[in-house]
Length: 606
Image (tube, rainbow, N blue to C red):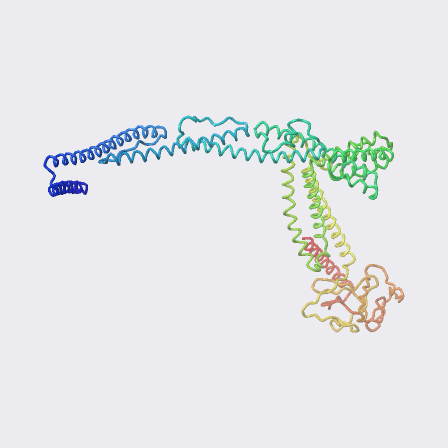
């Protein structure tokens, strides 16, 4: 049982007790029945009025709740439609009071959402209006009378954020352009004369309209100022180049150049005017020293000819270079030619530098080739020979590679320019081929000369005998000692015919004999050749008789008669008993010696 029902029963019991208690009081007092009836009627009436009023109030409450429910349902439906949210779903088995409360709470919530959306829409519209005025753009199209949806608000927020980013970007761009414009105006000494220029320089940055048109106008103004500034800088730089060139041509001393160094930077109007005055002064001075200037230009022309690999015909094609009539016309011709050559060199600078690099590598290659044929390089002091061979091997790899790179670059350039790239009056690859051919011919010529020289030397040796050689130490041989006479088969040979030399045979090599050795004092030995037909001063002083041979101990008349004993270079295995046998042995030994020399020469060349 509900507590309200229990409370109602208790109320009824309480009322009954109250009536019983009243009756007891009335009995005790002695109130008659009629008055009791009247008093009971009064109690009944009071109780009934009270209950009627209470019932009326509760009925009124019910009516109000029902009306509120109806109103909330209507408003809730409208709000759901405006806010585009799902309709409110009533809970099953709910009381009127709870339903009214739920509906009222939902209505209040939707009202709050509607108010917030309207406020945000208004704020976004204000921001959009402000940004659009600054950017000179149309406002965002949105219905301000209706409640915006969440998607519409999101799109509006993104639009405003984009406008804000655009504003910041354009403002930054405007500030940068403005700063550059002010710098250019200061550099050009330009005063703002138009209203737009004044707005840029003088007006507040926040008040400037950041429209695309204004930004484009700003950029156009900056470009115009930069072009004007570039022209001024180019003009000033050209004037400075003229001044430097005239200084060099006129050979102006440094002390006269120093006062002008202050205007050698900058491009302001006063600097340009000062540079022009200096150029005019130097031009006038140039006309007064026209011969010296032309000679200076000719030196520069010769340098460019070398750098551009001009042939002699190309150099002679410029006839004014050889003229001695120093006039203003001749000077103008030289000026025009030096400008043309300078531009020509700058246009082909990379190719000329590549050709120059090849020239240097080629000269180094020829130097290595020359050293390779020099026998003295085998001294190899300090490891130079090994270092030279490494550099030579490296150069032999890089030189063909450099030629191929230059060939490809030159072919590409010739295809683009539709003209031939000339070096010393001919195409570069033809020039390279010619240099290789000349090198081959020189090697062939040197080879033929060596062969001819060896042939002549062989013939000379076969006819007169070979020159003495320093004997090498061999096993089984002991060096000869001064003062001793070599014995062969118990026979001592110490004389020779007047016009021939005694040459013992050892190992297939013949040596001239006799050879005199000085005492061990560090002096070099003196070689006396008897087959050449020439007399040494010492032999002349001896006045030996060439026809008569006189045996005197170990000396032969007509031989070497110095105080130092004779000494042979090596031992003699056999000796002829007669002069004819000795001649045959001498011829065989000479031929063997010549053959050995040819083999040794061939090995050195290879």
